[in-house]
Length: 266
Length: 266
Image (cartoon, rainbow over all chains, first blue to last red):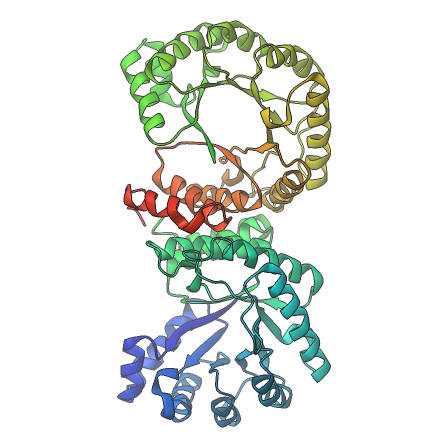
């Protein structure tokens, strides 16, 4: 599993404050803690700063790159922000995210090619986000084809089929699972990634749902996730998913996680 | 989901003692507690009493039937034991279990037909138990065909594809998931059931694995399970599986379970 650590996001109050106050020590700690907990990429998001998004992200990336050797996942819906910070990124980054929205696609794709970026592709076009399994697989095929045509190798693409709240869309998780399985079988070199929090929106005990969703999605073919690597119960659900998916020979990874105290809350 | 309560099993020391000492009050409490926790059937097993298995089971069934209105699941590998207790069973019971083993099949099938029993069918023949996905689906097809030929309706069959310990068989859960999905798609009226404890044998934090396995199996098509209905975390995993599988409109069942305190440990 490829783990994108999600903690450095300005929607978290303490991160917002640390960026606002230029508290480099706090950011550094957050970065190192995620690295130690097994993150492969560190997502950085300064969206809440609106007009100062690019400037704040540049500062944040500078601190994070100094704190850990991990590559960055630049998280912004704004191609201008990505263009602004991309030159300062040292290791091949991941971009979060591209879609089939025409303007967003055309602005981002030269940046993806220029730096051979990994890129998260959402199943969304100018008309809508993909809700049904068929919409997800159709948009995924189209997005993958467009990216390949532009020169992005299949294994640089992290396809996110999206998931919507079960509280209002009873079939949303099932549709995502089905899409993950279909896309995984059709594009064996592609990566599949998903955000986890949407699925439980509006329901109680959201973390139980998020964890269960992650375990099932991994068995369906998900091989990357945007998560909080310090959430031990979530990481345990991830390890359980990998074990059940037959990707943990003789349960060695599971046993190692147990020895490292990951399952202490179970 | 159809829940078969597993607690009345002589392999549990307190149950063994209660049967041995004719402690009807203890058995009665166990039966009522499982009924209140949502069991649809109560499994009764007196296998550890060996030569006294039939006699002890008759006593046990008598108490259980008096304590709750739930139907019984007669759990014995010995057709003679089943034949002995079947006449005293009031409601249409479930038999646990039939297999493709020639002698076991031929002895049991007249009893199944005679009482229109529900019956758990294991993917096992005289040569072996089914380990790979192909063995499971092949034996399942054969067992279902044989039972249908004998007059058992498809929706009376609870097919158990079996699962083996992940500690020694890395692909065992994946093989079971695949078989569940294939069999579910091929036989839409059939029920799919599975025991949960085998999968985690020999590994630490077994309940985490058992719960995760149950959630995934439900999304794959499992609609029945032999479980301890008093295990709140396991029942929470079950509710999460039903929710993720799109079988819980607007999450009403999930929210009700939350209100009833089922998720208090999360």
